[in-house]
Amino acid sequence: MKKKVLITGAAGFLGSHLCDRFLAEGFSVIGMDNFITGDPKNIKQLKDHPDFEFIEHDVTKHITIEGELHYILHFASPASPIDYLKIPIQTLKVGSLGTHNLLGLAKAKNARLLIASTSEVYGDPLVHPQTEDYYGNVNTIGPRGVYDEAKRFQESITMAYHRFHGVETRIVRIFNTYGPRMRLNDGRVIPAFMGQALRGEDLTVFGDGSQTRSFCYVDDQVEGIFKLLFSDYVYPVNIGNPNEISISDFAEEIIKLTNTDQKVIYKDLPVNDPMQRKPDITLARKLLQWEPKVQRAEGMKKTYDYFKGLSRDELYKSEHRDFSKHIKT
Image 1 (cartoon, one colour):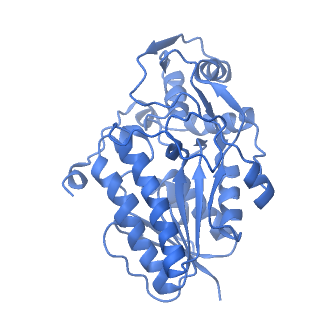
Image 2: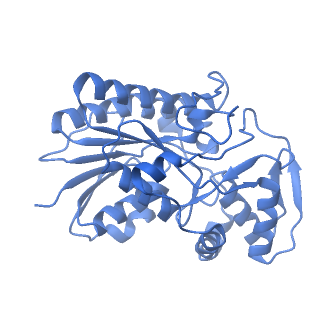
Image 3: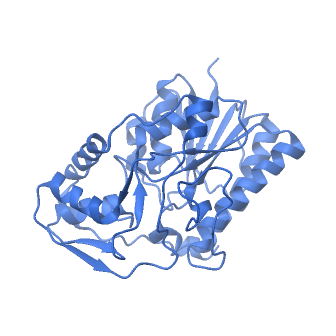
């Protein structure tokens, strides 16, 4: 009998790739999403898969799954500033109420739960690179606090259920990840730069461009998550690529990759935008025998090819999602 896994946020960027991976590994997969930021087209390839079931549902509401359930991966959450600044309360709720519901489900089903935490728990870090034992530098009342604190609470309640109820839990701290199925206009730097290049617009850098990021290709990220789920380690583990680059240098890379001649323009840095972001993956290397394999040049080409394949309407449409029904909750 096939093991059954529930993946929340299944129509999102990472969630949809995880659905693909677990189906390829022979699991029976239940995908769950309310499409607040997910996109049905990300899972259209799974529509007729015999081992895939989809449930449209908001995880902040009570969750019922019939029959046995062996694993849960909680990836339901807005993940880009353009989203969580528009729906701050829903962002807090999915990290708190949603995680609470899934922990209760894991307890009832005797299932193992992996939660998707984030490098944002480190805030604007004063330690570089960031290790798992660094407690972070987070502005709890700043505009990004709704996401940062939702994820920090998510980690805390997960460990509480593990310690008090004995629930099998895993925590992955995800650093900047990229690849096909990212939303072109979600506000993050890679789709923003590639969209601007494809439309012939100048590339926008916020701040002076000296801030750094480390980008991990989605296949590497999924491999790290998969290995962590089946490890025996219950504490947070960084999964990301430690190959660091400044945003200004990255903009030049994109111009070269896309063979365009756009200029780089500079705008004010958003409030509490981290100046440094680089994972220390010593623990992942030791514990999981994991490290990223895909070089940035290769991963960026695959990602750019995906964006080039979008229709003209998709390329030029503005990001005007209707969040009204979620803002009221």
